[in-house]
Image (tube, rainbow, N blue to C red; front, side):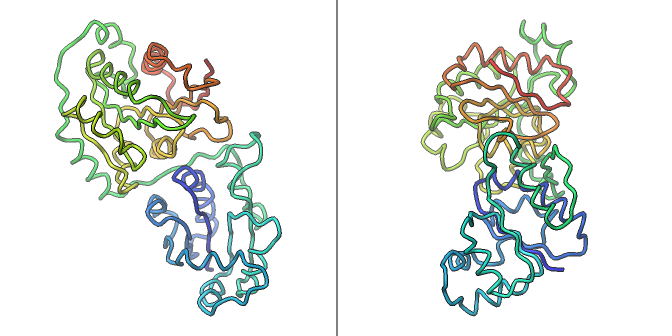
Length: 337
Protein backbone atom coordinates (compact mmCIF):
# COMPACT_ATOMS: atom_id res chain seq x y z
CA UNK A 1 0.00 0.00 0.00
CA UNK A 2 1.23 3.49 -0.88
CA UNK A 3 0.10 6.40 1.31
CA UNK A 4 0.68 10.10 0.70
CA UNK A 5 0.19 12.75 3.38
CA UNK A 6 0.06 16.40 2.34
CA UNK A 7 0.94 18.57 5.33
CA UNK A 8 2.56 21.94 4.85
CA UNK A 9 3.14 24.44 7.61
CA UNK A 10 5.50 25.55 10.35
CA UNK A 11 7.44 23.42 12.85
CA UNK A 12 4.57 23.24 15.35
CA UNK A 13 2.17 22.05 12.63
CA UNK A 14 4.55 19.23 11.76
CA UNK A 15 5.05 18.18 15.40
CA UNK A 16 1.30 17.94 16.14
CA UNK A 17 0.97 15.68 13.07
CA UNK A 18 3.47 13.11 14.37
CA UNK A 19 0.88 11.10 16.36
CA UNK A 20 -1.20 10.69 13.19
CA UNK A 21 1.81 9.29 11.36
CA UNK A 22 2.70 7.02 14.24
CA UNK A 23 -0.83 5.59 14.22
CA UNK A 24 -0.71 5.16 10.44
CA UNK A 25 2.61 3.35 10.67
CA UNK A 26 1.36 1.00 13.41
CA UNK A 27 -1.74 0.13 11.38
CA UNK A 28 0.11 -0.18 8.07
CA UNK A 29 3.58 -1.42 9.05
CA UNK A 30 4.47 -2.50 5.53
CA UNK A 31 3.06 0.54 3.73
CA UNK A 32 5.15 3.07 1.86
CA UNK A 33 4.37 6.48 3.43
CA UNK A 34 5.43 9.72 1.78
CA UNK A 35 5.00 13.34 2.88
CA UNK A 36 4.60 16.55 0.92
CA UNK A 37 5.71 19.48 3.05
CA UNK A 38 8.84 21.30 4.14
CA UNK A 39 11.54 18.61 3.76
CA UNK A 40 13.79 20.16 6.42
CA UNK A 41 11.00 20.08 9.01
CA UNK A 42 9.84 16.58 8.11
CA UNK A 43 13.25 15.11 8.87
CA UNK A 44 12.02 14.65 12.46
CA UNK A 45 9.51 12.05 11.20
CA UNK A 46 12.11 9.63 9.83
CA UNK A 47 10.81 6.88 12.10
CA UNK A 48 7.31 7.09 10.63
CA UNK A 49 7.72 7.87 6.93
CA UNK A 50 9.74 6.56 4.04
CA UNK A 51 10.23 9.82 2.17
CA UNK A 52 9.64 13.48 2.79
CA UNK A 53 8.73 15.83 -0.06
CA UNK A 54 9.82 13.45 -2.76
CA UNK A 55 6.79 14.88 -4.53
CA UNK A 56 7.87 18.39 -5.46
CA UNK A 57 5.76 21.09 -3.82
CA UNK A 58 5.43 22.63 -7.28
CA UNK A 59 2.88 19.93 -8.05
CA UNK A 60 0.45 21.04 -5.36
CA UNK A 61 -0.66 24.44 -6.79
CA UNK A 62 -2.28 22.72 -9.78
CA UNK A 63 -4.66 20.97 -7.40
CA UNK A 64 -6.29 24.26 -6.40
CA UNK A 65 -7.40 25.25 -9.93
CA UNK A 66 -10.94 24.23 -10.90
CA UNK A 67 -11.60 22.61 -14.28
CA UNK A 68 -7.95 22.61 -15.21
CA UNK A 69 -6.41 19.93 -17.33
CA UNK A 70 -3.79 18.40 -15.06
CA UNK A 71 -0.26 17.98 -16.30
CA UNK A 72 1.10 14.50 -16.97
CA UNK A 73 3.60 15.03 -14.13
CA UNK A 74 0.78 15.66 -11.64
CA UNK A 75 -1.26 12.70 -12.86
CA UNK A 76 1.69 10.34 -12.84
CA UNK A 77 2.69 11.34 -9.35
CA UNK A 78 -0.65 11.33 -7.51
CA UNK A 79 -2.05 8.29 -9.32
CA UNK A 80 0.72 6.19 -7.75
CA UNK A 81 -0.94 6.33 -4.30
CA UNK A 82 -3.65 4.12 -2.87
CA UNK A 83 -4.54 6.65 -0.16
CA UNK A 84 -3.97 10.39 0.00
CA UNK A 85 -4.66 12.34 3.18
CA UNK A 86 -4.47 16.05 2.54
CA UNK A 87 -4.48 18.55 5.38
CA UNK A 88 -5.66 21.33 3.11
CA UNK A 89 -8.36 23.98 2.99
CA UNK A 90 -10.81 22.56 0.44
CA UNK A 91 -14.25 23.88 1.32
CA UNK A 92 -15.35 23.75 -2.35
CA UNK A 93 -13.88 20.32 -3.01
CA UNK A 94 -11.53 21.45 -5.76
CA UNK A 95 -8.45 19.71 -4.39
CA UNK A 96 -10.35 16.47 -3.79
CA UNK A 97 -11.80 16.57 -7.30
CA UNK A 98 -8.40 17.13 -8.89
CA UNK A 99 -6.72 14.37 -6.90
CA UNK A 100 -9.40 11.93 -8.00
CA UNK A 101 -9.08 13.20 -11.55
CA UNK A 102 -5.32 12.61 -11.29
CA UNK A 103 -6.00 8.95 -10.55
CA UNK A 104 -5.56 8.68 -6.78
CA UNK A 105 -7.35 5.58 -5.48
CA UNK A 106 -8.81 7.17 -2.33
CA UNK A 107 -8.67 10.79 -1.22
CA UNK A 108 -9.47 12.36 2.15
CA UNK A 109 -9.06 16.09 2.62
CA UNK A 110 -9.24 17.62 6.07
CA UNK A 111 -9.02 21.26 7.25
CA UNK A 112 -5.47 21.74 8.54
CA UNK A 113 -6.34 23.51 11.79
CA UNK A 114 -8.98 22.89 14.47
CA UNK A 115 -11.84 25.33 14.72
CA UNK A 116 -12.34 26.56 18.28
CA UNK A 117 -10.50 25.42 21.37
CA UNK A 118 -12.25 22.19 22.33
CA UNK A 119 -9.65 19.87 20.83
CA UNK A 120 -5.90 19.92 21.04
CA UNK A 121 -4.32 20.20 17.60
CA UNK A 122 -2.58 16.81 17.93
CA UNK A 123 -5.88 15.09 18.73
CA UNK A 124 -7.78 16.98 16.03
CA UNK A 125 -5.20 16.17 13.38
CA UNK A 126 -5.37 12.45 14.12
CA UNK A 127 -9.17 12.18 14.09
CA UNK A 128 -9.15 12.15 10.28
CA UNK A 129 -7.98 8.53 10.62
CA UNK A 130 -11.45 7.57 11.81
CA UNK A 131 -12.52 7.94 8.18
CA UNK A 132 -10.37 4.94 7.22
CA UNK A 133 -11.55 2.86 10.16
CA UNK A 134 -8.66 3.53 12.54
CA UNK A 135 -9.62 4.20 16.14
CA UNK A 136 -7.99 7.23 17.73
CA UNK A 137 -7.77 7.56 21.50
CA UNK A 138 -6.82 11.06 22.72
CA UNK A 139 -4.93 12.57 24.39
CA UNK A 140 -2.08 12.02 21.97
CA UNK A 141 1.53 12.97 22.65
CA UNK A 142 3.91 13.65 19.75
CA UNK A 143 7.18 11.78 19.98
CA UNK A 144 10.43 12.22 18.11
CA UNK A 145 12.74 9.22 17.90
CA UNK A 146 16.39 10.24 17.88
CA UNK A 147 18.87 8.36 15.72
CA UNK A 148 22.18 7.26 17.23
CA UNK A 149 23.91 9.68 14.85
CA UNK A 150 21.88 12.64 16.16
CA UNK A 151 22.43 11.61 19.79
CA UNK A 152 26.17 11.30 19.15
CA UNK A 153 26.14 14.79 17.67
CA UNK A 154 24.28 16.12 20.72
CA UNK A 155 26.77 14.51 23.11
CA UNK A 156 29.69 16.04 21.24
CA UNK A 157 27.97 19.43 21.12
CA UNK A 158 27.40 19.41 24.88
CA UNK A 159 30.74 17.88 25.94
CA UNK A 160 32.69 21.18 26.09
CA UNK A 161 30.14 22.70 28.46
CA UNK A 162 31.61 22.40 31.93
CA UNK A 163 29.74 22.99 35.17
CA UNK A 164 32.11 24.15 37.91
CA UNK A 165 31.40 22.99 41.42
CA UNK A 166 30.31 25.42 44.08
CA UNK A 167 27.27 26.53 46.03
CA UNK A 168 25.36 29.76 46.20
CA UNK A 169 22.79 30.36 48.94
CA UNK A 170 20.08 29.64 46.38
CA UNK A 171 21.64 26.33 45.36
CA UNK A 172 22.08 25.37 49.00
CA UNK A 173 18.41 26.03 49.74
CA UNK A 174 17.16 24.19 46.67
CA UNK A 175 19.57 21.28 46.45
CA UNK A 176 17.46 18.89 48.51
CA UNK A 177 14.30 19.93 46.67
CA UNK A 178 15.38 19.46 43.07
CA UNK A 179 14.18 16.32 41.32
CA UNK A 180 17.13 14.19 40.12
CA UNK A 181 16.91 15.52 36.55
CA UNK A 182 17.24 19.13 37.77
CA UNK A 183 19.50 18.42 40.74
CA UNK A 184 22.42 20.83 40.38
CA UNK A 185 23.73 23.33 37.86
CA UNK A 186 21.00 22.82 35.27
CA UNK A 187 21.70 22.91 31.55
CA UNK A 188 18.87 25.08 30.23
CA UNK A 189 17.91 25.50 26.58
CA UNK A 190 16.25 28.85 25.85
CA UNK A 191 14.50 29.88 22.66
CA UNK A 192 14.18 33.69 22.90
CA UNK A 193 11.07 34.57 20.90
CA UNK A 194 10.80 38.36 20.92
CA UNK A 195 8.41 39.29 18.12
CA UNK A 196 4.64 39.64 18.11
CA UNK A 197 2.06 39.15 20.83
CA UNK A 198 3.55 35.75 21.74
CA UNK A 199 7.05 36.98 22.57
CA UNK A 200 9.01 38.71 25.32
CA UNK A 201 11.58 41.53 25.08
CA UNK A 202 15.08 40.20 24.53
CA UNK A 203 16.19 41.95 27.74
CA UNK A 204 13.97 39.64 29.79
CA UNK A 205 15.53 36.56 28.22
CA UNK A 206 19.01 37.99 28.77
CA UNK A 207 18.33 38.74 32.43
CA UNK A 208 16.75 35.32 33.04
CA UNK A 209 19.74 33.68 31.37
CA UNK A 210 22.11 35.62 33.62
CA UNK A 211 20.08 34.63 36.68
CA UNK A 212 20.18 30.94 35.69
CA UNK A 213 23.95 31.06 35.26
CA UNK A 214 24.74 33.21 38.33
CA UNK A 215 22.16 32.29 40.97
CA UNK A 216 21.57 28.69 39.90
CA UNK A 217 25.11 28.08 38.57
CA UNK A 218 23.54 26.64 35.46
CA UNK A 219 24.48 26.94 31.83
CA UNK A 220 22.31 28.29 29.03
CA UNK A 221 22.13 27.06 25.44
CA UNK A 222 20.57 29.67 23.15
CA UNK A 223 18.44 28.30 20.31
CA UNK A 224 18.24 30.70 17.39
CA UNK A 225 16.63 30.69 13.99
CA UNK A 226 16.01 33.23 11.27
CA UNK A 227 13.59 35.18 13.47
CA UNK A 228 16.26 35.59 16.17
CA UNK A 229 19.06 36.86 13.90
CA UNK A 230 18.65 40.45 15.02
CA UNK A 231 19.31 39.41 18.63
CA UNK A 232 22.31 37.18 18.07
CA UNK A 233 24.85 39.93 18.74
CA UNK A 234 23.29 40.95 22.05
CA UNK A 235 23.17 37.29 23.11
CA UNK A 236 26.81 36.77 22.17
CA UNK A 237 27.93 39.94 23.96
CA UNK A 238 26.18 38.90 27.19
CA UNK A 239 26.99 35.18 26.98
CA UNK A 240 30.33 34.90 25.18
CA UNK A 241 30.96 31.36 26.45
CA UNK A 242 27.44 30.03 25.88
CA UNK A 243 26.76 27.93 22.78
CA UNK A 244 24.32 29.10 20.13
CA UNK A 245 22.33 26.32 18.52
CA UNK A 246 21.04 27.32 15.09
CA UNK A 247 17.92 25.70 13.65
CA UNK A 248 19.67 24.18 10.67
CA UNK A 249 18.83 20.52 11.35
CA UNK A 250 15.79 19.77 13.49
CA UNK A 251 16.67 16.15 14.39
CA UNK A 252 19.99 17.32 15.85
CA UNK A 253 18.28 20.19 17.68
CA UNK A 254 15.76 17.71 19.09
CA UNK A 255 18.57 15.44 20.28
CA UNK A 256 20.28 18.31 22.11
CA UNK A 257 16.99 19.35 23.68
CA UNK A 258 16.42 15.78 24.86
CA UNK A 259 19.71 15.92 26.80
CA UNK A 260 19.03 19.32 28.39
CA UNK A 261 17.84 19.52 31.99
CA UNK A 262 14.95 21.66 30.83
CA UNK A 263 13.76 23.95 28.08
CA UNK A 264 12.40 27.47 28.58
CA UNK A 265 10.45 29.29 25.86
CA UNK A 266 7.17 30.73 24.64
CA UNK A 267 4.43 29.77 22.20
CA UNK A 268 6.66 28.53 19.38
CA UNK A 269 7.27 25.49 17.24
CA UNK A 270 10.53 24.92 19.12
CA UNK A 271 8.55 24.47 22.34
CA UNK A 272 6.57 21.74 20.53
CA UNK A 273 9.86 20.25 19.31
CA UNK A 274 11.32 20.18 22.83
CA UNK A 275 8.23 18.50 24.27
CA UNK A 276 8.19 15.86 21.53
CA UNK A 277 11.90 15.22 22.14
CA UNK A 278 11.07 14.35 25.74
CA UNK A 279 12.73 17.37 27.36
CA UNK A 280 11.20 18.89 30.50
CA UNK A 281 9.48 21.99 29.10
CA UNK A 282 8.44 25.25 30.72
CA UNK A 283 6.49 27.29 28.15
CA UNK A 284 4.88 30.72 28.55
CA UNK A 285 1.60 31.42 26.76
CA UNK A 286 -0.18 34.72 26.24
CA UNK A 287 -3.04 35.14 23.74
CA UNK A 288 -3.06 31.58 22.35
CA UNK A 289 -5.19 28.93 24.04
CA UNK A 290 -2.79 26.22 25.28
CA UNK A 291 -5.60 23.68 25.52
CA UNK A 292 -5.58 23.70 21.70
CA UNK A 293 -2.02 24.72 20.83
CA UNK A 294 0.18 24.07 23.85
CA UNK A 295 3.20 21.79 23.40
CA UNK A 296 2.14 18.26 24.35
CA UNK A 297 4.50 16.16 26.40
CA UNK A 298 4.69 14.06 29.53
CA UNK A 299 7.02 16.58 31.21
CA UNK A 300 5.46 19.87 30.12
CA UNK A 301 4.30 22.81 32.18
CA UNK A 302 2.53 25.65 30.39
CA UNK A 303 2.04 28.93 32.23
CA UNK A 304 -0.80 31.01 30.82
CA UNK A 305 -1.32 34.75 31.21
CA UNK A 306 -3.79 37.03 29.46
CA UNK A 307 -0.89 39.01 28.00
CA UNK A 308 2.82 38.30 27.77
CA UNK A 309 3.46 41.64 29.51
CA UNK A 310 2.28 40.00 32.75
CA UNK A 311 5.45 37.91 32.78
CA UNK A 312 7.65 40.30 34.74
CA UNK A 313 11.15 39.12 35.59
CA UNK A 314 10.29 38.29 39.18
CA UNK A 315 7.27 36.33 37.98
CA UNK A 316 9.48 34.40 35.57
CA UNK A 317 11.97 33.58 38.32
CA UNK A 318 9.19 32.39 40.60
CA UNK A 319 7.81 30.22 37.80
CA UNK A 320 11.22 28.67 37.15
CA UNK A 321 11.86 28.04 40.85
CA UNK A 322 8.43 26.46 41.29
CA UNK A 323 9.14 24.26 38.27
CA UNK A 324 12.58 23.23 39.54
CA UNK A 325 11.27 22.46 43.02
CA UNK A 326 8.45 20.27 41.74
CA UNK A 327 8.62 16.54 42.29
CA UNK A 328 5.80 16.03 39.80
CA UNK A 329 7.42 16.82 36.47
CA UNK A 330 6.22 13.55 34.96
CA UNK A 331 2.88 15.10 34.03
CA UNK A 332 1.30 17.63 31.73
CA UNK A 333 0.11 20.83 33.42
CA UNK A 334 -1.46 24.12 32.39
CA UNK A 335 -1.17 26.80 35.06
CA UNK A 336 -2.74 30.27 35.05
CA UNK A 337 -1.37 33.46 36.56
